[in-house]
Length: 454
Image (cartoon, rainbow, N blue to C red; front, top):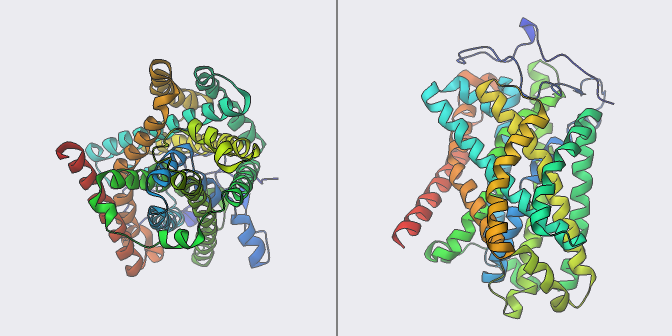
């Protein structure tokens, strides 16, 4: 069981103050802050095992229902060509999530708290607004994905399924009351189910593995083809998600890793291993979605599959097995439930970190979900499920457009020795992160230009 610890600290235990305007205090997610003991374990492998969990919760955001829509659309339209984008996005994610752990352990702050302290109010409040927009876009994708999963498995009408998703907050509350490790165990179990479902479907699809390997090679056509770029940005937006950066920097601090420099360096190493391994699993699942779409749809001439329900209905005749659509629905429902948990925690982190407003988790969840229900329910009621796939892809592009407002502050803070002390990011890592941030900004500018001019 989790050992409970107070979120306050003595003067000797406070994180690096440096050039921060105020000391680190009142941690976000205070009910789970430093509740997972690490220092009690005598061996390195047991301390490493104590760190396994946050990375997998972050990995959930890299395979949410919105990611399914963009990957299926990309695979059915362009075959295996966008696998390179999935790989590139995952490399970006590994670097950025390692910086989140560095910021949290080095400063004792999550990204939202760092932005509030590091910027004047005129800049911090717009950053909060952008973060909330990103979380709402994520929630829209979860609402639609979970509703489609319920429809595919149990025949529940999409309109009713959208409304039923408001009840998933009670799953989160129950798991949080049991302890943070139970929450992590739930997430990891669901990820295992998803991985098994896709492994079976890939085996049925029997893709051309030579073409799969070539799909991981870069191609300039992505920049030349506006439609391909739109889907590529959607994949980046669905993979490197803004709310994940806020979330990871908060949940790393659920570990009670100690206060000495040596303990913090070890904590950073273990947290980075955790997130890297988890994101490699996320890459496998993301690539599997795209490979399945390419093998089942693109090769059969079905090049305009964007709806999740349409994809599921086509799997049976194309793969010749009744179990494939069922596995697709199970994996989709698991993704929706997992994303619900992480979006709830990210929403709490953003609100508490930026505004210092603490709401009960169920209140915060219902507010966010209510806002997300409006576009999801509106599109479903007015246009039916025919337009839900397009809405899913749009949410991922919105997330991609929000990314610079989370990535740039993260890179700036972790490159500052005044803010992180001896845990400051090495210059080579900062250089890589700057290239990632610049790439994201340039791709977004290209998307906006093509949208308005093209």
